[in-house]
Image 1 (cartoon, rainbow, N blue to C red):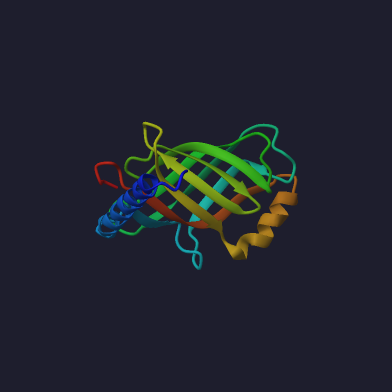
Image 2 (cartoon, rainbow, N blue to C red):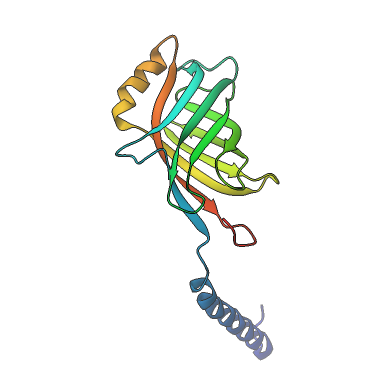
Length: 180
């Protein structure tokens, strides 16, 4: 870029325009309505009441085939966060207690019809989708700390881990129409 007065003036005009746009966006962002609804699912970490069942059980050996899973628990938080939420699906072949991938159907939340997620070393994140395949929510379940020793023993047993308790935070994102 040359140092001509025209080039410097163009740069200053461009930067001024950028600052005006940025400053103008701040009030618009501050006045935005809430963009998500937050629910609890399956109780709280201190009192988990959700149940997670697997058949056959999950072990430290990679699964030869899919493992059927059902996770269910009460929703709390008002609005769409009432009733019972259920995930019904499968963990993929190759899943172990250390790493999993899973997907299936969702019942109990408006607009949500399926889920997909991964878990690694106990950290799990699941995305929730509407009929059009759009991400409309997410959750981050955690298993009961008091159940942890039994979980580890289950992973090392021939029948594997078949039952856990959990709690989760569920986020529902606003749709383009503003509905949750």
